[in-house]
Length: 502
Image (cartoon, rainbow, N blue to C red; front, top):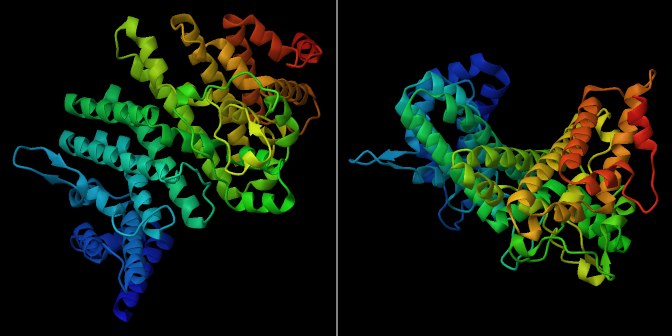
């Protein structure tokens, strides 16, 4: 036991030195570690506990420390060092095919979203994904293909990790502990970084095999996102967690609310295409009521959760952009069908999954799109907290993207669940009113000569919302009119007057 603990302490010390000392310290450590990646991965493979034992906790700490050191040394490493790391997780057979099962070693044994091993393992995948564009263009074609395929395997594991938030009885829990937050955030970051890094390779890499590998991996990621109901539900929940918690809190006693803030869970639901938000029922909580029940969602949030929310929203947006790009590779007559099958619009127009305790009060009848819209506020866009401003901008871009995709569906599909009317129902009166209020407040602040809130983010949000209205005018006059006059029963022409005055 003491030997393992001392080894963990030694590895942690070297990792801390490499982190605090910066580039020079990392170069020094890499130069001292002969065959460093092989040495470190050998420690991991031999120490990783395959089953419960007396030293399981100590072994997990040593594995996590070793992975953390390997992740640290990967930062700003040269091509040779990265090739050594990738070789540790890849084996090549006699026929030239690659076996990528080695990357799964990082998630073997007693690991999960609450494990320090998972945090460090996701960090390695994220580091490799972050460098894929730079690395692929400066190295050999074969090494580029190897890294692309390794990242694809790592991202699949990251998405599988997200799916583990759904328990066997179908309940989804929001990450609460530090390890959970870090693991989920790193997993989301890895997927986003991979998608963003692969696109330049698909179009610009000079080698045919590298372009083909990037295209296959990208399409595989999009297919996994669009086909897996569990992964989609988890991403939607993570993207709207503060609003969902606040909404649940509004319906509970103070004692129950405190428990919900510690652990929010969801009930099992059916496929997305069966979750499209129906018309409001008399016994259901309508999206019209959201404005009063979610206005305090900042109180149930935290900086760690905000980082997860921002990255989940980023993933939804990047997912939609790549769905558009993937559809362009098909024949013109098939492009719209491909876009509709791979777009996150299906997820956004679906009802959010109820929490496990909502059956005690009322049935929640609100779509994920409506919950996303609640983040669009001037206070966030113009505030001092940059992460909340990013969330407001991401939410605005997602609303616009979903409207564009739904517009395509309305022209080329007879499925009412993907129509502009479905978009309007999903956004709901509450969502329309949020967009109205946010745009009016933003224009008021931006045109006020003495306003201290005339920030670049606020300007960007106003432009995005105006562009959303422009898209709706070209596709659905009723939706545009609803947004412009506030979405309520009474007509409010203040936004129109403001736009005309500008």
